[in-house]
Image (cartoon, rainbow over all chains, first blue to last red; front, side, top):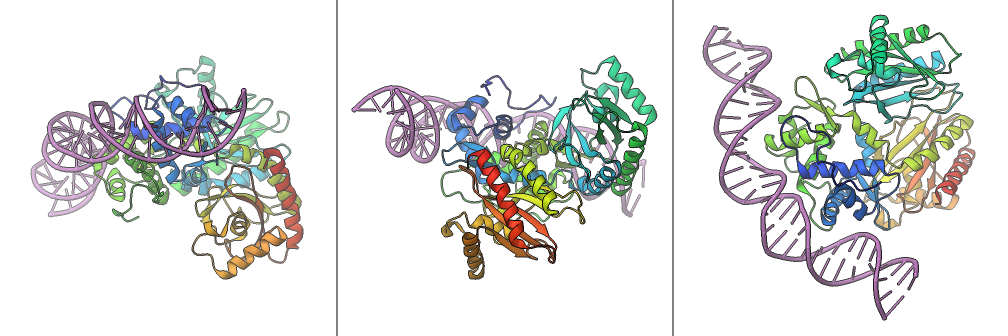
Length: 245
Length: 245
DNA sequence: ACGTTGTGTTCACTATTAGAACACACCTTC
DNA sequence: GAAGGTGTGTTCTAATAGTGAACACAACGT
């Protein structure tokens, strides 16, 4: 983690209005901490933000008071456990509806199934469940991110966006795949997010919510993609019905 | 969710020094949002914080720019998906080491096993895995919190704390149980965190980290607690060895 | 003993934030 | 269909809250 003095306070320029400098800096500390795979000193943190050490110090103390950051005996800081507790509240109603469905689908299909939502221009995995008779270890851990422009879940999500909202790295080939996905109602991918695995995803559109998708991953020779998609579509319909999509 | 004007800006008075007001208010928005089981309007949020609406507005805009908050078409706000991505960075090295062990233990024991860490005076579940042949649905979802003073994991964690750091609601009976847990190396509970379930937990002490515990839950008639504890102790030892406890 | 690298504290200055007032959009209600 | 309600988003000035330098102290290595 090298220092990046040039980073602006707001993550991206949101078109309108100024952002709160202090809050933005505090959040960036959390982002820096998540990127760094190890505890950071206050000096390192201050350097990464491009602020004076005493500024970082007070921000960190505040984060610590809220439990979002913890300190080692040496004084180094790391993300705090309460952040995980906060994150449990993200789309909890969607998770509550989706988890039983994911579990059922995973067991019936014998595949790892997961719930993905769109965040800005990235896919975030919110929940994933492995089948009872899992062969390999978990593929997509909750919290995993990757660009919308790769993988079956990304395509399923792009079907829900007007082309004007697509990220700039969408190729003509990808646009074609998305169009195909719109027509048949599901998307697939090979070796995109995870090497040597196939994936199938179906769109999950909910009223007043960011675009989402249900997905399943499986070994190439395993299974007919269309039947996997059919099973996922069933689950998606159930979730939609429950949440009034 | 009623408004609580009286809540101070810092979560708890941390003995020393002032906290950053703006950052603290921003975090409290996240906390309020996690508590409320539904999207909140800006007015509701401002009321809950006891600040002027325009203040809440700017804070929310900043949170939104960082993806920690999302907005409905109506303008109401809810927690954003990127919060889940951030939370994936919490103790990721511990989680990476613990997950395979939890999985192995869960399958061998036929029980849901989970990893719990101490946060202030509460236990937070960081990861949980169900056995392949799970009978019931998941007991402890990641992010779940409960007081240290209840449940087997809490006792296993209290064994790692000097009595002076114990919360005030520790009864004499509980102190006795903790002492017993210290002696034999593991703790148990019945119907405490989850009605009609037994739990076994072993302490997991790591260098420079908050106290943690590995735990398993099972039906009362199922199994000998000591053998469950022995299996968990094996996993704890492996994790300790990997992380240099 | 010295320099280095870290944390924690204090303080004067000013940039940042606070909060009121205003403009506008969208409902429902009468 | 006009009035009233409820909500978002914008602009403005005062002064509060934050900024960053300098200082004190502790731990560790050379």
